[in-house]
Length: 160
Ligand code: CA2
Image (cartoon, rainbow, N blue to C red; front, side):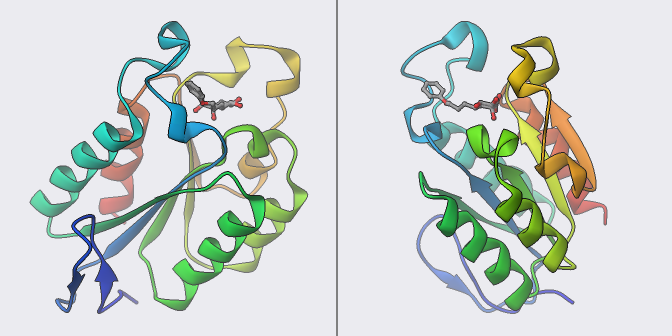
């Protein structure tokens, strides 16, 4: 099922029957581009949203791009993705990736495919980043390509 209405980046609702892909970003990613460029690159989250929006529109889809520093918001948005019939969710749960059984449960509770996304490659970093609860339920994982990780995940989601 595809959604028939979605909030676009420009804040408008589209009434077209275009597939909607949720892109959910977790804690501290609002600060992207301000530090640790050697790990995360120099793109801001707005830059990434813009690139994804262009790419989705070119493919006849729309993205609904969000960020929160609160675990419960991410869980509510996963439920919402299911409720509106989103085609897929791209999820960079950031630090919650490695800690949140509640987010794992939310992914398992919905039928919308969830793709795990990371800018860096957690497996090349500290041991505590090697465990991913999100990865236990995600359809696929895209990591280690900077902002490109999102684009690679979007391309696969668009082909579903
Ligand atoms: O590589 C990723 O995308 C991560 O999800 C980023 C998380 C980290 O905890 C994960 O292990 C891997 C950290 C997000 C922090 O984002 C910032 C980036 C630049 C400046 C400030 C915060």
